Length: 190
Image 1 (cartoon, rainbow, N blue to C red):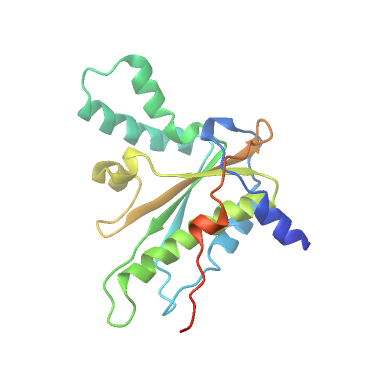
Image 2: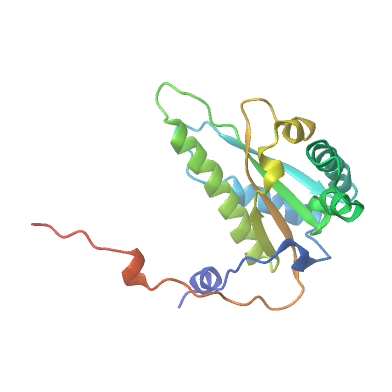
């Protein structure tokens, strides 16, 4: 079986807290983003972009998440506040995939959104190919306009996902997968 197929068959999601240093080097981050940008993009619109959070920038971004959390939950306990402040510091690297889908005369917005999703999945696969673990998640702050503005998103932009990347702290366990006969059918000609 080709090596690439085996690689695809072994990809697993890990919890961000299970991703430990060291994270990808600057050259590897460039490779990850280069691969993530090679997705179907009808009309060559580039309906996505990336925000890289590494080092102390993860905590700086976490400050915006913490502020929004405090505003929503003024009675939150200190440990809850600390958890929110560290949301983007759980893994050595976080790359946000930002969807900038917009109405277009020829290209449906839905196709643009799917292209951003494909970019996020390619980022996850590229991380796995480089020997890292990854977790593609959103969580509540991906939908909070105040947090998004603090992270530099424009009003028309949305988070397709935060991809947390690091070394797996332990071999990932597989989860049960649905049998193919439950998820795939073959259309039969009459």
